[in-house]
Image (cartoon, rainbow, N blue to C red; front, side):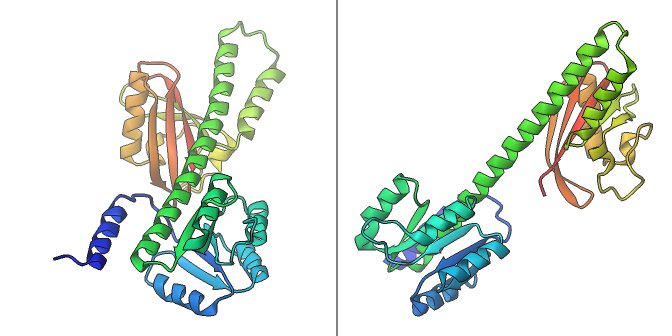
Length: 292
């Protein structure tokens, strides 16, 4: 016969299996004036993969927030009648990317729930707590923060790529017009491309699949490659592994945009997008966005 504790442990184990977000060394900061409770939480979270910091002084907590990348702040201070927590209000103003939570007694659960609905806090945890359930709730909250940050990163990547694509489309339209534009305009177009913060590499594909680099903007030339700097005239395979250059060949010959996510290159992790400009092994551009 299962005990309640063993059933709860099985439940939290099943819930943990549903969390697939890669959270790298997250940090949780707890602020409260009950030292025994803070010590109990430190012991509880010591085996966890996230770092747990506990302080009793809100000003010390602010200093820690300025020195560390903190994903979640928990305040265990009792909620006043209006529910406004001045410390968390300051956290929201100075550190908007950090999730805010309160650790409160069951009698305050209704008030905390209203604060979540109103957007004043992101989460609340109840005390006294069941150890395994609280640990799972913290893991789940950190996973949520990782998802929020990943969504922001992807949105930024899409916006950057959209800006590059618009610029390239403009250049294609200009190249189709009679070549009576002043040289100054062509130079200006090249300067604009060079100033883009996203690495842009122009590729010319051959029948044998040996693509050559025909363009590399400033951000591309500054990529931290182990070999010689990337520059026009070099072959793509000199800088990218076969698994990537092979996919670029397919993209150029089929005229299909190919997206390669989270590829390890030159000591970092990049998202790559290959955009063909014509089919049949013609030219295309490769956009790179470093994610870590």
